[in-house]
Amino acid sequence: MNASAIEPRFRSGDRVRVRRVYPLGHMRTPFYIRGHGGVIERLCGSFGNPEELAQQRSGEPKQPLYRVRFLQKDVWPGYRGNAADTLDVEIFQHWLE
Amino acid sequence: MKDSGGYQPYSYFQLMEVSLRELLVEKGIVTEAQVAAAVEDMRNRSPERGARVVARAWTDGDFRRKLLEDGTAACEQLGLDVPALRLVVVENTPAVHNMIVCTLCSCYPRMLLGLPPDWYKSRNYRSRAVREPRAVLSEFGLFLDEKTTIRVHDSTADMRYLVLPMRPGGTEGWSEERLASIVTRDCMIGVAVPKIH
Image (tube, rainbow over the protein chains, first blue to last red):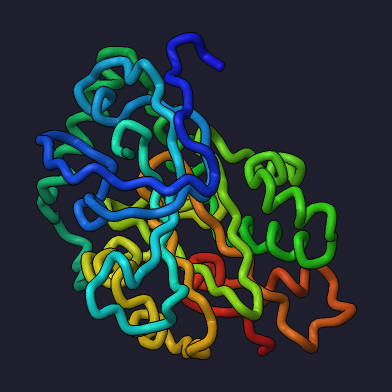
């Protein structure tokens, strides 16, 4: 792994929550998922931090990127449909707690 | 749109594109030939590429396993380069149906499907696919059993997604080429399933 990459803190199956924060700038974390809890589906690898790249900076240190699986019924109040329906979203580690 | 063949003023974005391109060429950063080659390359990519991948997965179990494990490496094996971005292939089964959206913009597996359709980039699809996937699918004419689990994949960062649809019954003994002919773009986004014509 690249020396400037940040170590992954989570593993598949870990329960996580997306931080409910609203900083300004270019973010790849959709508003609708902030504050919601899900489960790590997989670690995708480490990638340049898009919030840094958008500012014309290097994107280093690279941030671990995960696919996090949420239950639709947890995300949308009154969700109609199968209770097992899911939503998988890619979230960078610094957005997870 | 009516095209009289006469003079048409540039739109805002056309003007911006021409200005930027001419500046880049003037400054020696790219050549006109490189720009033309990149556009040509983009136009040459079509859903037929993705259909080839799906047909191979339907006929070759080892390839299918590899595709689901590491989509990028499996495509390279077929001679398809999937540059920079990682491909995640998600498999439909009798119990699970997958569909792809990019709620933030229009991330799309262009290397396998070409340019995204307009509806994929529309606010309507992007906001509703994550929230009421069954309603959206029904508008595409796809009515799933209530017992089917829907997995929506929001393509928010560096991964790109392709749906591996189920091979329909009645296609036993078909050649890869014939199988590929029933795998449409929409099947690989997950808003349709392959049908025998």
